[in-house]
Amino acid sequence: MPVYVSMLRGINVGPHKRMKMEKLRLSFEALGFEQVKTFIQSGNVVFRAKKISTSALSKKIEKQIADDFGFPVSVITRSAEELGAAIENNPFLKRPAIDHEKLHVMFLSEAPASEAGKKLEELTIAPDQCIGLGNEVYFYFPNGISGSVLMKKPVDKILAVATTTRNWRTVNSLNQMCRDCR
Image 1 (cartoon, rainbow, N blue to C red):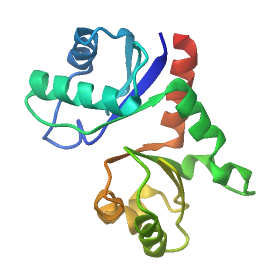
Image 2 (cartoon, rainbow, N blue to C red):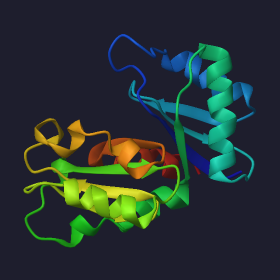
Image 3 (cartoon, one colour):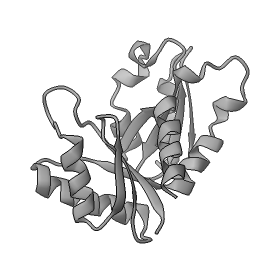
Image 4 (cartoon, helix red, strand yellow):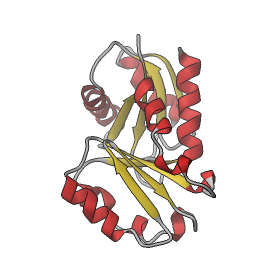
């Protein structure tokens, strides 16, 4: 069975959409997934499942979460191979003097329209940088994500797709969890 990682958007941030990771694991196991493991409290789940498209998998998980927790949550799923490719394809890794602690990846439910990608690039104000590649947008925030003007804008509405963002450390930790699950 293939290994997947699902990333939930906007849970355990503030007082709304709170969920315990143990209950989240049980939701995934109720779907028949195996070797279910969570990483930190922000809704990152690594698991094994029968081969299925990641978009169909996300929809299935979203329905289960709505049933189990009583509120909707956007879920972005990648296969272990897709997550590994997202890491390898990070264009900022090839640039000198990039602080990896300032890198972030926005995972998208699907590739946005090219006009939306251009709009995002136009809204990115130096020293912030962004590069969209397919279903991911890579960010470099030299002053940190909280210091970014761009991240105060409704990026998901600009791109018109579901999104969730993870810092570079989390992305690499999830990738390691996927490798350990094989």
